[in-house]
Length: 307
Image (cartoon, rainbow, N blue to C red):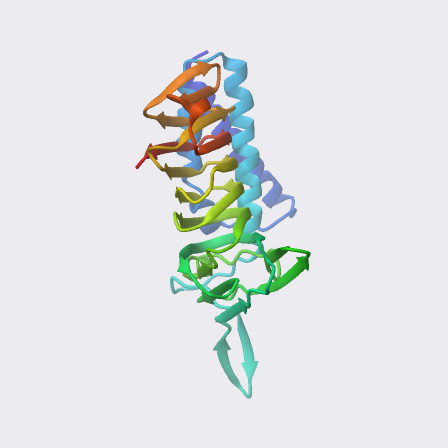
């Protein structure tokens, strides 16, 4: 079977299915929404020219097609035809129409006796940055787009849990690109993160913080993390699809990477391959600081550097 036939066959089947569902009035097909998903064509093309067995190509192509259907559904749900490059939610106010761009500020004081904290964040769309430190436990500033967040803190003994979640799960076409979310954290507590990253950019410089664990679930995301020397042991678990991931760790830290990635490129400079899917820096077992990375990524790129 020719490799090109796999690509064009899957593409024609997918487009034909969409047109058929449109004709049967299952949904209203929108070209403008589909065109925004054009990078999936590059992924399918890449699958078609991989030097692997054909049955594996078919499985991967079907997985990419399923991902495209899910992404199309999210985009279409909030799609409305418009002429400008921005999407607004409108409401009437005494005969006038105004947009509903949202600006929010959250903060919580650091209570006496709190030594550790966890952050659970829905980073659905937009740009999320960690700007530095604060004397409060946490401070967050959100601006742009119509997305809004709920903020709450749960305290239990010397630990507290900060939860920042989107009010609803709707993704607004184009408008969410304007969503900017800035964070500042207290450096005197040990932090853990549980981050759900969608079609977003995540830029966290964590060098000033004691980081115990980072859990990231990502999809079509750009993730940039930088770790420091404040913690002796840090666990990083990343489960991502179609994401670009960059991680910078201290040069003197020992690091072990376990990866079960599928069709993902990686750059593990200065790492030794210990066994299948396991890489370590020299002297890992005796290093004063150890970083453990578990990576499960599909159609993603992962780059780790030591600084």
